[in-house]
Amino acid sequence: MEIIQVVGFALIATVLILVIKEQKPMFAFLIATAAGVVIFLLLIGKIGSVVAVLERLARSSGMDMIYFKTVLKIIGIAYIAEFGAQIVRDAGQDGIASKIELTGKVLIMVLAIPIISIIIDTILKLMPA
Image (cartoon, rainbow, N blue to C red):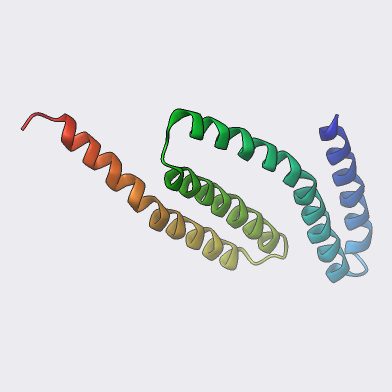
C-alpha cells in the first residue's frame, strides 16, 4: 500500500507544480526537488531492510565482506547519480545531468576494479596451464 501513498503524493506534487510553474518556475522546481527528496527519504527504511538481508546472506555464504561492501557502494553510486541527474534534468540542464551520469559510471568502474581482478584471477587458476 505504500506505493499508493507515494503515487498519491507524487500526483499532488505534480498538480501543484503545474499550477505554480506558470507564475513562479523557480518555486515549481523547488517543489519538484523537495518531492523527490521526500520520496527518497520514504525509501531509506526499505533500502536498509534490503541491505540487512543481503548482508546476512553474504555472511552466511562466507563471502569476503570487503567485496559485499564494494558492491553496495557501487549500487549506492548508481542510485545517487541517477537521482541527481534526474533533478538536474528537471531543471533543464541536460548537459550537467549527463556529466553526473558519466561521473557515476567512472566511479563505479574504479570501485569495480578489485572485483574484476579477483574474477580474472579465479578464471586463470581454473584454466589448465
